[in-house]
Image 1 (cartoon, protein in one colour):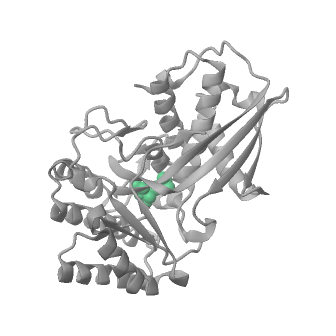
Image 2: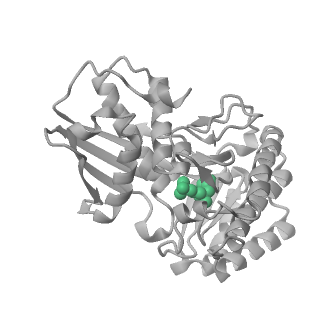
Length: 358
Ligand code: PMV
């Protein structure tokens, strides 16, 4: 599909006012997206697991208006959240070509996250995908001909324009975003479910998120992506990410956990290596991030388990492991790793499904 396919030309029905609600998961990338061009297009393909417990619920109330321009107000946990407004304005600006009635309605957006706002877990993927799904549902209400496959695809397409990784939060559990020569149907415009066989080892794959630093990000991902322009290792990074995704296809099929660990940990460290070698350079890991990584390595060696880690653009550590190792790894986390978390906090999660209308 091309960008033009997401432009709607006619809306047979007009609705005076209504309410739509959705819930959308956060996701954790195995192959990382870091670097973009043009209109939120990724420099390399990425793949992630959607999560089960970390999600955003959004209720969008809309009412017809006569005035020009955008009109919306946004609430987080029922309290006004003016700090979200600039991001939503930018989002509306980017999607108005595809949601032509956006300026014809006043919107009230109520949003709530299942994880604490101050957890350092990015809410942009779940937040943008939940909002995108509400908007496409609104479009479907006015255009009942719109089929479900298009609703899903367009929600991912719009979510991408809000936050790249949000395109991977509409479907689940494994979603690819970015054109990749070995992945049929993959696109730079939207996420698609990983289309090949996945070994049962990766069913209910566990992700326990260790909250090392609950603070605001020191460097926004927008700035981080920008720093990949002119980065001395950018080309090699994009090629390596795509090669890692090629390798991951057979690993996901065979269930080869030792190769999985190698790819996933290397991706996490490469992402942070890009940050450390950009200009300006920066470090998002904290001393406790490194302490945890070293302890995961020692535990893996000692026990022969297949626990590994990945990182987002922050200090928190995502501990990944097969469901069959849950008991062993959770004891290790509680007894040893939680001491390196802020207030001992961690979130037990696992791969889940995609976004849903409520
Ligand atoms: O979606 P953004 O622009 O916030 O970028 C997120 C990038 C990473 O989370 C660091 C990696 C990824 O692929 O999710």
